[in-house]
Image (tube, rainbow, N blue to C red; front, side, top):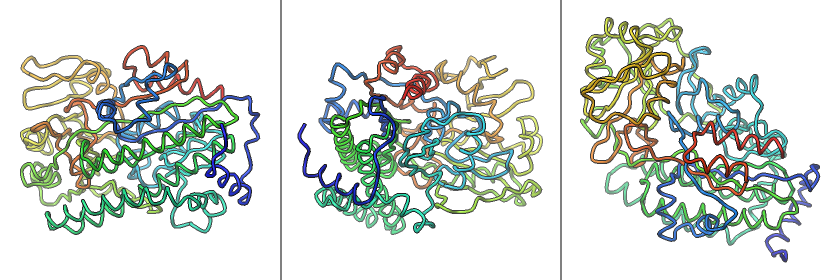
Amino acid sequence: MPISVRDALLSFALRVLRLKSSETPGEVPGLLLIQIDGLSYEILQEAREKGLCPFLDSLIQKNTFTVGKYFSGIPSSTIVVDAELFYGTHEGIVSFTWIDRKAKKFRFGVNNVSIHAVEEELKKTHTPLMSGGSSLMFAYGAGASILDLSSSELDLHKIPQLIPKYRGIFVPLLNPIRFWKIFLVFLFSTISSVATSLFKRNFHYYRYTMIELLIKIFLNDYASVLTRIEIWRGTPKIALNICLYDHVSHVHGIRHHLTMQALKLVDFYCRELYLSLVRSKRKYSLIVLSDHGQADARLFRHISGESIDRVVASGIGDDSYTVGVKHVGATFGEKEIQAAPDDLKQVFIMACGDTAQIYFSRSLDMPMNKEVLDAAFPKLIKTLLFHKGIGWILVRSGTADASLLSREGGVFFENGKVKKIDKQIKNIPPERILDDLGRYSKEFNIGDLVIFGAVLDGKAACFEEHEPHGAHAGFNAEEPWPFMITNAPAVIKALSKGEPSKEELFRSVRSLVSQV
């Protein structure tokens, strides 16, 4: 295949910047792993039918590629799924935001200090997947030693230190056509968000969405070009997370026209990367996957006019308690907040999509069970259960390991397995969900209470303020399962078994990578 002008410029730029080729012999097979954050199997199929992702559709049509969905489990969250992918475990990681009870610190999935601490713990007992490779735009660096552009390592407060290490980031400036393509996407998104802000009379909405969208578009564009550089260099293991679709769907909704335009741009990135693989001297396997899906959402406070912290405070019924929501939006470089177990009057709510963890500072060392909670706060669980925005509550129990409660009755677990289900429950979660909830209920780091939003008019109640239209949905909504597309025979074999769990599927990926 003849070299293009773009590739010639890229080759020249790499030589000028002294970015050397990989020392791994060219006959060793490679792997490119592309994660499309937040895209469900269902939306992928709809987009294919509408011609919105022609490259991914053409890939699936090839005889050498297979597509299928897999079970991401509870909770369905990037930080959890990717821990399983890169380290073979997600133990202790119970949400996108949670409290590490052992360290007594808050953990935020977008905070580099938090994720670095989590990853260092994982490395003590598990082998990272990307050793000898590159990880770009994931939360985890996963041991990447060639290029680590992950949340775990990236600190925007140390830009002078980053420039020598990531000097390849200047290469995309040589591509003005690409720049104008992403500029037009940003321009259309700006016009839409300005109109929405004027309609809602909410300038904060405009400022937040535009800043975030600007960052996501340009960072994703840069990262895709940096990935092409890694292919050109012959790096044997490369992982890229494209989070553009996830961000736009959170803000606008899973089927909004701007969300679909973002998906078209993601499809364009995938096509360019695939063409780079075809031209590469190294033979690469390709895996395109998502980490979770999203559901249509409705803000919890719009259901009854009350925020979740006010509802919890009402159930506690004691004004001496301080109840607060700890938001996802922790900034890069921000110091972690030290939890205060000696302060008996604090209640922390860690929200992620339609799920919220509720922690009492008095019980960080030893989580409370239902009997203790009922004795201390007789109205709390009843207040939460009978709020129409709440569907289920998971709580530890003295009579059973844990109870999953709804207004109609409960599901009771013992040793992580279902022991009893009340007959009056009309909509019992599927067996697979219940089995995973049984495992989840045994996690030490979950809240004293875990609440799941109800589904009203087809929309999941969302506890996060910055996810107005699309949210990570739990079992209470129809589970939006993620997907995988691959041409790796060993992974195809695992995928062809039909809806494997992430643990089953990722074992085959890890086995494949061990051969690279």
